[in-house]
Amino acid sequence: MNIQQKDDGKHGAFELHDSETLAGEMVYTWAGEKMLIIDHTDVADAYRGQGVGRKLLDAVVDFARKNQIKVIPLCPYAKSVFDKDPSIRDVLRDA
Image 1 (cartoon, one colour):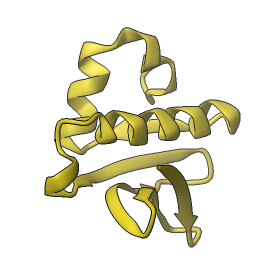
Image 2: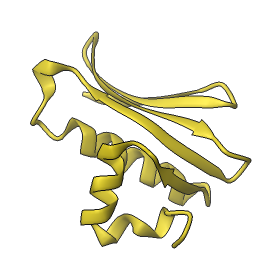
Image 3: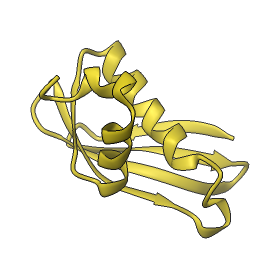
Image 4: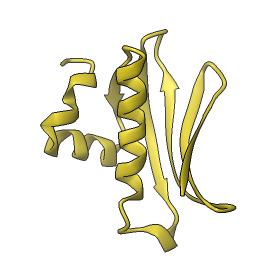
């Protein structure tokens, strides 16, 4: 499985692919040059319960750290993980 980022300058997504199959994606919208909003996470039914959502969120957090970007998690899944895991909160807008 590999994660790819797509970004058109306004919107983007981190996608996790299993060979040719899209296992899941985390979609975001840019809110300025140094902030993004996680809008939505979707995991294919066959991949639920396998940590796909967390792998995608970890990729977003890694990207945010490397690029000094702050994150606003509007997606209920992403927000719940940020609430449970203080080790990734450094990228939150209010951190």
